[in-house]
Figure 1 (cartoon, rainbow, N blue to C red):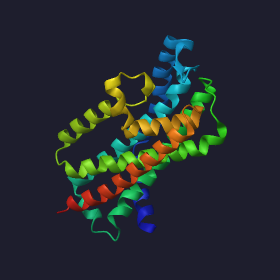
Figure 2: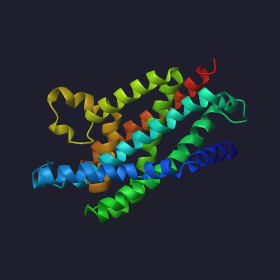
Figure 3: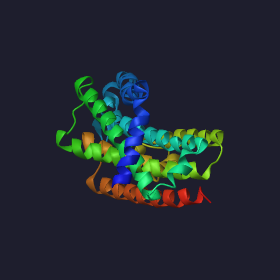
Figure 4: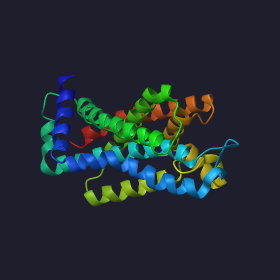
Length: 254
């Protein structure tokens, strides 16, 4: 595990050089929750219905903010490969006594720690400021789900990073993917309220799976069987993305 911890320590040193960057990472999810959550909560009031029950939009949107954070963290961490490749550090890393998998794991473990901090701040704000009722016994599972969500999307985005050589092309692909995946998911609204032509893409979107699982853990919406199936599907997505990232990192050096 020493090579993994060495990669984690390097990521920590990079983040420590800019405390403003680290502060921004932690506070952005909170700003999403307070700005969009409060605005839509006031606009919809008690008319927002889930499975025939009226709930506050703040409570519904909380899981969406955490899922959005996971995706954003994955994009930011995978973008670091571009910087390392441009300055040659990436190729130097590949000469060190560590495997490609250990390099990927070290990066995602550090980002997973950041995700835990971000998710914790968001949950505290949801409870204390917005009055969202969270199932406290589920908090460890919420944080674990957020870490796994970040890992799954990081490995997926890392594969794209190794395939794409141009910085501008990567930004275009990632930004387009982000908005498409975000708006055909359950981040902002329940999938059963989507138009028929959007329901199928939403149901096969890993971002929907992650959001629904986090929403079940936070406020208990959804059926257990459906959530168990989506949890298994996202875990399969995570493992497939990890093996694909390992394969792509080898191709990047050919």
